Amino acid sequence: MKIKPMDDRILIEFVEENTKTAGGIIIPDTVKEKPKMGKVVAVGTDEDLKENIKEGDFVLFAKYGGEDIEVEGKEFKIVQRADILAIVEQ
Image 1 (cartoon, rainbow, N blue to C red):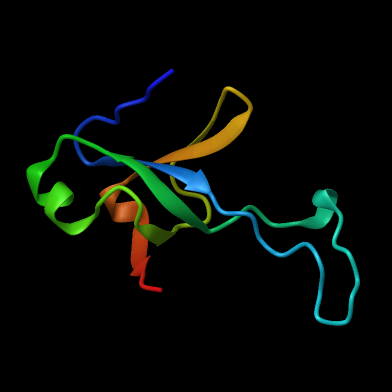
Image 2: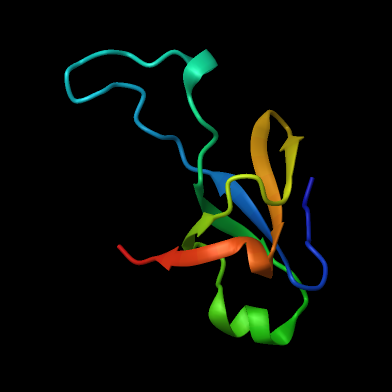
């Protein structure tokens, strides 16, 4: 299934966060916070948005922004432009 966001929305795939602390303690799924960083999978139809954010970019997004969806066993988030806080350069 292929998802194409509309207007100023962006489809983001969650990036797995480290499940172990520096001291070696494993953090169970029940106490982990939702990721706030992800990889852009698709960009909506807004031309200005397409100039600034590209597929494959890593972005930081608002903790409670957007909508969580699950497609074929993978978790994604659809957020609006206003929910993107920064592009992460590696």
